[in-house]
Length: 298
Ligand SMILES: Cc1cc2nc3c(=O)[nH]c(=O)nc-3n(C[C@H](O)[C@H](O)[C@H](O)COP(=O)(O)OP(=O)(O)OC[C@H]3O[C@@H](n4cnc5c(N)ncnc54)[C@H](O)[C@@H]3O)c2cc1C
Image 1 (tube, protein in one colour):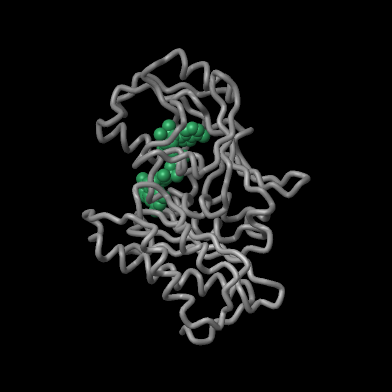
Image 2 (tube, helix red, strand yellow):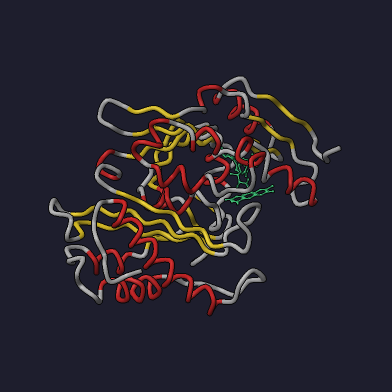
């Protein structure tokens, strides 16, 4: 038995918002893989749960005429990994969500829950930050769109109001076209493991594939919120792949952009080492996926 005051199955997004407004001590439940743990631990005991689990408009992946990819907030990790649009255009997101939990969690957990829980360790978050995703929220006052860079306000905290439903995520064509990516999750186990550190890189090479046009690099658990390493990105733009300082300087700059901390999972010093090493390996793997050569790195 769960200690909850009610479980309401919302018919659609507006119905969910109405129920949330009517009940101050209530929250959204989607897959429930975070919420039910919090209820069980007593942190959310006695809450009313407004379920959006069966709202079909929140599920699935589509592509708009201008190439914008739309991912429904209620889409499960399993469905994202196996979706043809995701596999074709943003396979590093498929890769990232395929590292989450185990098969049962990936079948039940949703990308909306993963982003809205505000966790820096959320495995979809760094890739969504690298992709410059936009978040579509609907609340009692109507709809608003928030850039993911403005969404997180602190550990477990976001700008989302309790009564706002995250409907979907939008990724514009210019943010994924010609980019090749790689997600690196470091944990002590291969599955059922929250990331000690996560790193997502997207790279775009020039036409001759011997220089970098653009790089986006984002980390999870390297700072209180999922964060981009902006000075590392600036440094590598326009750099030739034969430049032997490329990887080391990229890694040093990435570290200077982050604020890792001690936790029971890992020390600050170990995370600092991971930030540098994962930056290099993720950049090299992305470059190789893009058809570039970095021969001096093995
Ligand atoms: C055994 C286990 C292993 C796990 N392993 C991992 C892992 O490896 N990596 C990882 O990142 N996570 C992991 N998790 C955490 C969890 O599975 C994910 O965070 C998941 O994405 C949560 O999605 P959900 O649909 O279950 O969210 P829920 O539990 O339903 O909700 C999570 C939070 O988001 C809010 N919310 C959900 N959907 C919406 C929406 N559409 N609009 C507005 N608010 C919303 C809820 O109110 C709640 O605050 C694990 C959990 C368990 C139990």
